[in-house]
Length: 373
Image 1 (spheres, rainbow, N blue to C red):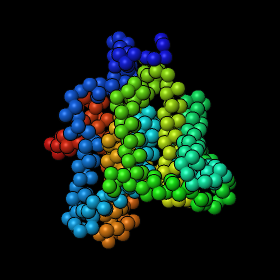
Image 2: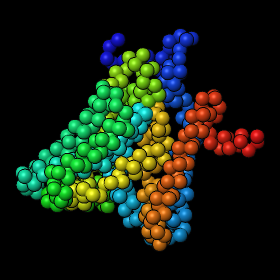
Image 3: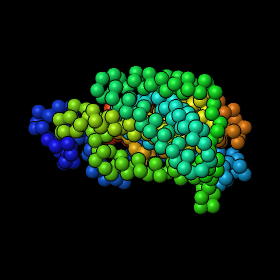
Image 4: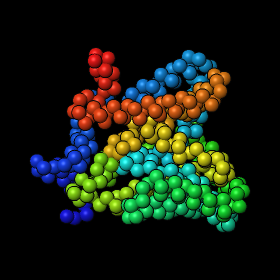
């Protein structure tokens, strides 16, 4: 079988009546793309979480109409979520493959540090040095991503262990290189254009970059063979191999892409804060993972959307902003996000159990059935 597997091979995945659970799971993953879209939208966990987000926005808008419900405040929320959105795209692909990446925050820091040191060594404030810095940051992140992917796919080390190790390695190397002191020499062109620049009369450039990454990620996941293979690998690696998917190669590509996006996020962070912020990304990985899971991507693999990830990102961002404006202690954000995260995983468990029984995956029908028992 050639490297380019025909999509029909995956969509059919027909091995006869003796087909095992692997084949069934890969069929389920791909059949989702062929079902009617309107009913799926309303049943999707991402849509249900979107309703929760709308309710949160309405509540804060009622509580603080003169401050929260303002265009300038919305702009601030979007800008604050932009870097996490870039990381969330790569994390969505990884979790759909039934993997995890705990290293994105450290890779972000490492990429920013290496980029800042290269730009400082070259000198200058123009786009020439800034372009080199951007390429260095992305390449640094890509290298870490490929490193993770090789260990996971070839050495068969669990993703949790690999990325936990690279988390410490990337952060430790960043501290060794800098001596633990943040680098604050950043080309002014980065801060004035990417960090705090606006286009179209007030839209942050950093948010436009994040939107482009989101749209490209959504297209790649939902409309290309690469995305199809991602769902297939997450549903069942064995079934994916049987229909000709180069699973190891695909995992390396997925982790490499996530690393490259972490590198891009590193230069975005450098542009926004004008410093490497070595100690400021300790919770970034957990925030991104929580957002992806809250948005409906299954920790068990084979299911997820970019739209859901975006919605999941805005729930903690809106909560934090709303709590500050209304005078509620921002520490309650952690409590609220934790509760939503647990609820999201529970909903995913209900959906998986219902799908296994061939029943409706609607959460509301699940509660109705339990009430009637």
